[in-house]
Image (cartoon, rainbow, N blue to C red; front, side, top):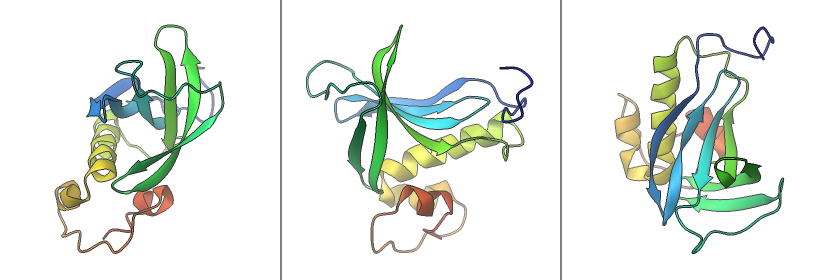
Length: 139
């Protein structure tokens, strides 16, 4: 994929802040072409089996998000939700990583929004859509 116009050569593949979420793994995957939330099964129990390309709506503290089911040869079934695609606006890996961490925190814990930004987050009257989150509508 080297040399394609939608790749950010300043970024590399990195898994960020994967942790247990409702009995499964939730984190952010940074690549030179996209930044995605990933949900992976920690066990078969409670994991909804979906066909390739099926959409699963997942409720988080920040609102409902659609994840697309995929199957990876090594990881098995996983569900992804695009945060940025492409990722050309990131100047370096560190800024992409900071954004990934902020997304992970804001997604699952509205109380931690003040920690995401140095400015006070204020009150949120309704769950944020993915678009509003990315536009920093909580400010």
